[in-house]
Image (cartoon, rainbow, N blue to C red; front, side, top):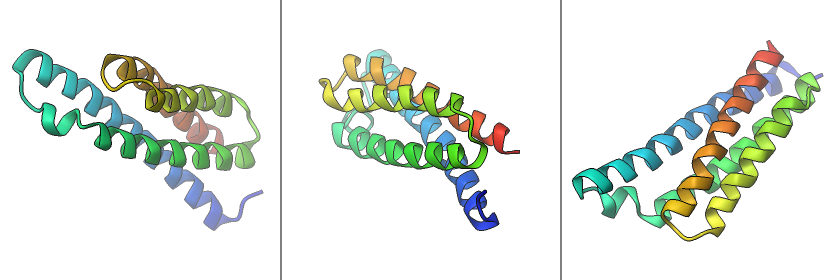
Length: 124
């Protein structure tokens, strides 16, 4: 059983994980839309460094949140879903920047966000 302080940290990590996943998704989609349709925004939104650092931060927070969630409620479903998402996100770091990266990252962040939401629901 987690102490109240650790339970609060775990809940905050899951909420932060959902927020980072949403930001990553918005970043990916808006970058493609702005560059593809309008021809603007590529310099900042599609800068590989922005994506790499953000993705590394999301992976770290996701892994912590999933681990704390398992310790709290003992259910493996969020861990399995989130781990698949983390693998896809990590794969997004290994492929060339652009569509291959987006094709791995978007499903990964969606799965990870869903796993964080499941963690929050199971802990309640």
